[in-house]
Length: 150
Image (cartoon, rainbow, N blue to C red; front, side, top):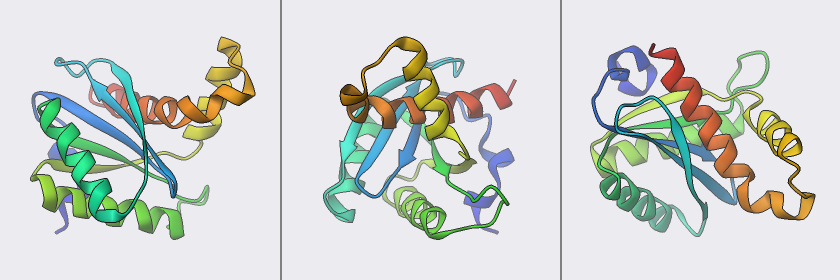
């Protein structure tokens, strides 16, 4: 069985957890606190190529001492797997091989929409959104995962 398909096996690994919102151009990155209670934004990684992206993500895993990574899985509303989900799943699998960290795919339907709502509520101007929207989505994905473990 593929460990990426079994989040229940990875839910209680101690230590910080990295959360990713994977897009074609950018990857939003968030990290949990050491107790695994809250998610904080880290950065938005502008994608270059697969090798550099994996190297950058592996450095972040090491920097924050993460034993686990949660990757947003952008399924269709029906639950079906589309092209974006396939890309996120491929990156998740490659990241697991690159780092040895446990990687969990997490349903992220509507995370970007929710991120826009949060930024609207905070009064963020549209021009400044691009810099933070992926980070906010990563925080929402990771926080949803953390909350599910309680």
